[in-house]
Image (cartoon, rainbow, N blue to C red):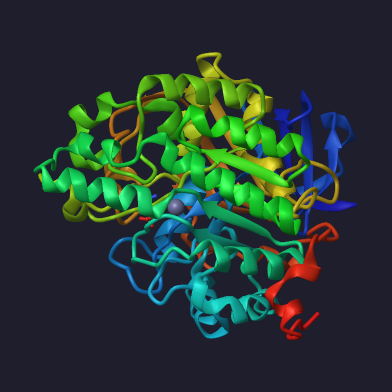
Length: 472
Ligand code: NCD
Ligand code: ZN
């Protein structure tokens, strides 16, 4: 057998094992993995001695802004950022303009995504006004759903609990996972008004408006609705230690719930507001150090399944504001996650195998892509990142691909950098350089996605059932 490429003598890392060996790739798929002398003949070979080879990261939470806000980010710039960051699959959020709420808007998004360097899944919106579109979105090719329980950029209204329940009932019948921005809109809106009324507009006022109960209430409510309907859910950006208990309890009750946190909740604390001002404004907020410590415990005991980025770029002008309420929320992340977290691996805070589990294998499993993605096995897509754990430097917003590269991690010292990224066997980043010819190589993951058979519950109680309008 003649193969396209053999990556030779690397330390191969999966979530279960780490060993020195080689990987053979043909037609975008891994065909052999083992000792170098057992490899088939190849057209090309890459010497990776001293380097580590990991399944590419799967970032379940990015905002690429197109259509509608292309000055903040485009699919081209966002996925170029992913390629440079060792990320081979992204799941993109629906708060664009227009939001991804029906077939027509999904097709606009798919068109924008045709410039992608890396593979992608699209989140469809679960909102109060598009419950009748959810099944069309599934047919049209979304990989999962997103429900904004709290306020969001682009001002999508947060659905009332009744609409969330109906949405869960519909999606539960199809097995697709629903990602929740779990913050209680009413609590934080009232607190923000109260803070504004007494003249607070300093950066820490943002934190004061969103105490952990904002998230705890929403996580618990989402878990109850998921338990009732059998819907699969994913809790986005866990930011507080307090959210861990309802997540643990829901897992113990058998709810199909996964959870992610982001590098900024693991690495920044409230001091960042004084040091970085409005740049650090993000929803949910970066919190006090005690939460950071508890989140690391949640990472270690696996209450938190994944690390994603909530890549939410805005322009410099939109990020910097002396009035905190005027600064846009969120910042770039898809390109900085890997160096930031590998630095934690280098410091001994996380093993490399745990890193692979949290950034690749777990999201692949949660979204029905494993073992096609999230694994280095014969038959898996050759979505691969080669990393140099000895390479040191600092995060530098001047070199990021993102159109909104402002980040509170600017100049953060790093050790551990992705040097090559391959998506289905093709280099999209080689020797730290973007392979511009790979623009448009990215494909929708729906072609390989297989969600497990759904197990919906309590469907005899749905609004559709009691009014005789159930389509199923
Ligand atoms: C995000 C964005 O800008 O789209 N911002 C954020 O602070 N996480 C998402 C959002 O607004 O909810
Ligand atoms: Zn987000």
